[in-house]
Length: 355
Image 1 (tube, rainbow, N blue to C red):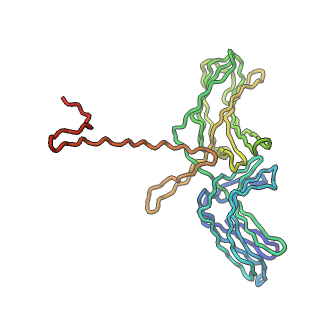
Image 2: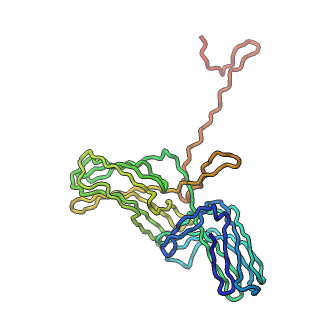
């Protein structure tokens, strides 16, 4: 997928990334609110390719003071647009000052680039990775940017603890809800049950919603905004004591990002399961429970010289803890009984009973 940009009437720049034919393309939301295709990268992957400058007029002299390319990771808060934070900034010089009289190509490579955070387009903040090509000229520099998408992978054990909570109103309502775990990957299914232990108010219906809360800034300059990502009615009508309502919520159909905590000391993203009961007088009773969403690796790697497929080892999502099973404790093995060559008796370390 080539990306073309015009330099006035004199030249045209073309940026082609390595392995474009085999690299995965994903859709990401842009500033215009629409989805656009971008190449997908992971933490530690190199970013390489070729910059081509094509002159529009043959034998026409194109003067420049140097050509460079930058790889930038940037956080921008919308209410403070003039103060972007570059948490990654790498530069490669492609050409020194001079003249171009014919088309020219310049290879570039950023080796093993650290990409600690996931690309994110939020309500009040965005985190983006991009390549910026700059042609330095005497009057005005010519710059163009190419966005890349980065996914941060993580992994958690399958034996995640379930969530059990009891909520209610004294002598009126007592319910118990249970979710099968509190950490879900973005393609997961939320499974749970609602138990009605006491019902003395007339419930009209019950719904469950996924809320996303975006927290930007710190201290008095903190902005918090929540939005409802999904909402489902899971019960219609009044329940009776002892009734059980099942919950099954598929996450794959929604545009979700992983949970993030204190990314670049700029923002956090949290998710909550919000259980709401509405009675016949339209009074609302609700209970929220925070859950962690994470991105699971879906790429299969093959070992060199082996036919066995090996799942890609993911890195941890920034701001969330990576859980691993504790390493088994190795106890020293007891020494075998030592024989006395003179008497033939064993040493005192022998704990066996003698008859």
